[in-house]
Amino acid sequence: MKAYDLIVVGGGVGGSALAAVMARAGSSVLLLEPSLAFEDHVRGEWIAPWGVAETRRLGLYDVLVEAGGHHLLRHVTYDESLLPAAAEARAMPLGIFATDVPGPLCIGHPHHCQTLFDEAGRAGATVLRGARVTKIVASTSPSLSYEHDGTEHAVKARLIAAADGRTSPIRETAGIRLHQDKAHHWFAGLLLDGAQGWDEVLQAVGTEGDFNFLAFPQGKGRVRVYGGYALEQRKRFSGPDSKRNFLESFRMISSPNNKYLAAGTPAGPLFSYVNNDSWTNEPCAEGVVLVGDAAGWNDPIIGLGLSITYRDVRIIADILKTNREWNKAAFAPYSEERRERMRRLRFVASLDATLNVEFGPAARERRRRYHERAAADPSLALHGVAVMAGPEAVPAETFTEAYRMRVLGPPPSP
Image (cartoon, rainbow, N blue to C red):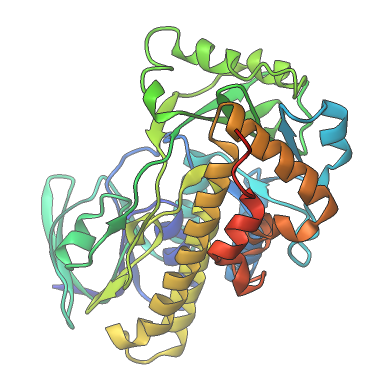
């Protein structure tokens, strides 16, 4: 039975990044990816400044920039309670959140995955596509079997890293429990080409009527757009005209330049999914460690999936490089840090969803009062700083019900 130091299952962002970093460090690595081509799953294209800092620490930043990674420099929050000029006067520079990071980094997800998969191979990892895991043994001497090109193979390793996504079979095999909260709203996404009128270094979010939008340009007229809408509108963007109906929802009085988004050409699928958070309290077992979504995910309303994954990779790689024993006990610091990180981000996501993806007169009035109060008291925007600078960058009090009440304020008078 062939032996490796590390077997990574899943060649997406987390798996390929970990394989590349550990192969560079001299470990023998096998990277198994079941797909023959990476597909657009309508998520995972925006890296927050703290996540970009993690790519630097991993030595992967230059790889992403050379592959076309595109920095955003400014942020504007639009709202139906604000005149467009007033919203734009409050534009926030995005280079203030992480040292030597000009702002968030955007790169198309399939291209992102392929770039890192190729980098893992260049670094010396054995990389296989179309490899389907058929059996795994999670123990102090882990092993697995996989099928590739019609042949069954059995291999063993010091450690198996599961980067096999939200439905991770390895997580289930290892007996690691996944927790999930209730969905708050629907979230849909679409990639656009031909949106040249949109400022290419501007990211924007906003709420008007019964729709919340987010826009993240990737350069050269390409923009990834998302929209949040109520759970009871499940079929809102279904049917043959779904993409056009989705884009028409972006036309807003409060954000006039959304007309460039509405006029864009769809360049990928339109997917809708319910938003929610999921987490594992202990993302490891003997012989197995979980990476990225396999270990639980954050509500996409705050867009931190990639940043979470890159921090997972950095912490795991640091542990592997500095510990002679790759056992469950060695990953205690990872479990502890990730547990608190995800708790804080669940809080922020829930607060953001309540504030920006609830609709009707009461919700509109709540947002109006929030924008008015936050303009006078920047401490009411600390949850936004946690998104950009990292959940450890703001006081612990930011993640309490007392802070939540300060942001949302008392219910409006009847």
